[in-house]
Structure formats: structure tokens, C-alpha cells
Amino acid sequence: MNSPDTQVQELRRQLKQLLEAAHANERKLDRFDALERRLIAVDSMEELVHLLLVECRQEFGLDAAELWLLDVDDELRRALPALPMVRTPRLLDGHGPLRSLFGAVRVTRLIAPGPDEALLREAFAPEAGVRSAALLPLIRQGLLIGSLHFGSRDPERYDSSSGTKFLDRLAAIAAISIESMLNRERLRRAGMTDGLTGVHNRRYFDHRSLIEFSQAVRHRYPLACLFLDIDHFKAINDGHGHPAGDEVLRQVGGLILRTLRTGDLAARYGGEEFIVLLPRTDRDGAREVAERIRLQVQDAPFITPEGGTLRATVSVGLAMLPAGATNFATLLDLADRALYAAKRAGRNRTLGDDELSAATATAS
Image (cartoon, rainbow, N blue to C red):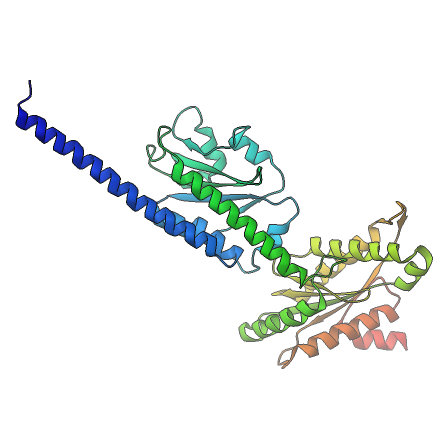
């Protein structure tokens, strides 16, 4: 039988362990509280992603962090910045990967070596070497919109017997922040986007083009400009009605957007004209993009509001920012002149500013 002194020492040891555990939980609560406050206060999707994937990993001593987000309508692809981020989320075009992780039970899952270990290979890149993980479902208004994954090389870090209270709360705050950023992006885009075609409007282009021009001049990289005009657009309106003309504009805008890379800029310049800026793109690359758009428009059966189809083509003027140019208007003028020459030369073609002399001679 233990002596009274031994029992007292054991009680003191247990009390010390309880106090240490309480202090550890208090520190953990403080860290989570600070993180939640920052999530609520973020100003951009870029900041939000950086906080979840970079700063969370550093703050909590993680070996890996992943963010999966459902993006069926490409809203997030448009919301994420054009410049590369330190870490980027995985954007999903369907629910399949999320169902694979959570099934019908959309609760935080703690995965360690054992029956569910295969999920670690789905949730993280193999080179991460993750041995245990917390998979947090992101849910808004009853819908699963993504998942946040925290991984560790320590197989005991996320034991299935551990509590998930802090993680559940973090997932809820992260989901709210993502939805808030999307709503803010929708409002922002409403003032910068052409309501009919979905591409940027003239106001946004005039602002962004000056930034792209100054960047190209400062860093001495090529900047290409494409001016596109729908051929015989008045005849489409006269022959099929203005609703059909609007539908052609909308579908052409969609074809242009699907052709471009992240970082390229497309806008409706006015009427049936579109304009595209291609940073860091040489003449051959710009011509390839222009021809891809032109051929897609030429081959597309445009669906009218009545369910019929019609055909349309575009003419494209291509120009490169000249060496020594002092303003963006120089590039714009060259692309405009090339477009005019393409239309005079017979339409449904791409003509570059380097071909203007020959095109003028042919036309005359």
C-alpha cells in the first residue's frame, strides 16, 4: 500500500499534468481565436488562401496543408489573382473528389495509419510524406463547398480519439470567409464586367491596360494586343433580330475567355468589338491565340434564342508593343489599324501590324 507521501506526490503529478494540459489548450484556443479573427478580416481571396495554406502550416507546425474548393462556374478561377501565389488551392469542377473523402457523413475526419490510410494519398501529394491528417469539410448553407486538409508526418498527430472541436470551428469560419470573398468578388466584378458577354468592360480595360503597359516597359517583356470585330454584325441583327445578335456577342465572349490563359485580359471594347491583351507573349504566340479564337468562332454553330443556329466570323488585328513606346495608345492604334486592314482584305482573317504596308498595297 502506498504511503500518504507517495499518494500526495502522485496527486501533485496528476494535478501538474492537468494544469499543463489546461495551459496547452488555452494556448491552442488563443492561436485558433487569433486565426479566426484574421480569417474574418481578410480583404482578398489571395490573402485568404495564403492564410489557410501558408500561415496555418507555420503556426501549427504542419508538414502539409491543402485547400480544395468546388468551382463549377469558374468563379474562383476569376477571383484568384493573375500573379502566381505561394500556394494555390485545387479547384474542383465536380463533387466527386469531395464525396470520395467524406461520403455521406460531412464531418471532420482524423486519418491515421490504418483502414482509411488510402485517403491520405488522395488528399495530399505523395512527396508530402503525410502519415496522419485532419480533413475538414467546408459547408455553407447546407452545401459542401470544399475541404481543408492539415497533414503531419507524425502518425500519432491526428489520432482518431482526439477531439475536433477547434477544427470544426475553424472549418466553419473558413467556409464563411470563402463565401464572403466570393460575394465581394461578385459585387466587384459587377462594376468591371460587361453584363451581356461576361468579359471585362471598357472601364476596367482602360484601367488595367495602363498597368500592363507600365509593367511591360519596366520589365522589358513583350506585350501583344488583339482587336477583334464580328464581321457583318449589322446583317446578323437585321436578318435574325437583336436578341440573336446579343446571343452571338455572348457566345463569342465565352469563346474568347476559354481560349485565354490566367493573366491575359479580354474586354468588350464597344458594340461588336472585343480587345485582348497578352502579356509576356511574342508575335508568334499572339498570332496562335488570335487564330485559335478566329477558327473557333468560324466553326461554332451559334444558338439563337429560338433554338436555331447561325454562323459568324471575326476579323482580328494584331499588334506588338513597339520598342521605345511611351504610351499605351501607340499599341492600341497599331492594333486598330491592323483590324481595319484585315476587314478591307476580306474579313475572317488575322492581320498583324507588321503586315500593314503589304495589306495597304494589296487593297489599293
